[in-house]
Amino acid sequence: MGRLLINAPHEQLEVVLVPSDAGWCLGFVIERTECDWWPIFIPGSPQWTSGSVSFAHTDEVKPTGLTPAQAIALLRRLGAGSVKIRSLLGSLAEEGRL
Image (cartoon, rainbow, N blue to C red):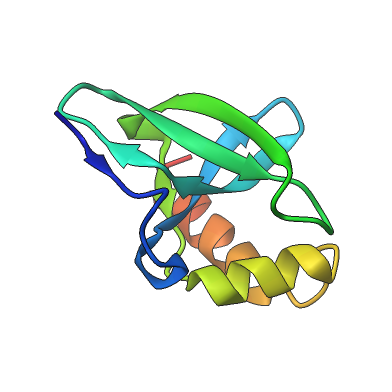
């Protein structure tokens, strides 16, 4: 059985990047399971409480190091101030991990 995170306080949600048709999306890990596919909530912008659920392979889930509060603020600002995410993507690309 996985560890369900959706009912956890926002501070416990892990903010990740997952691939999409348009690039990489911010998401919240909903449940860490023992299998290789995790449910990820992809929030909308600027209203982060609406969105969709994707199932991402663990190889494609990239931790951001952002707190949920930082991710929510970034979504509310429509991506403005995303220097940390852009740096992370640059580093992952240089390492061949994208």
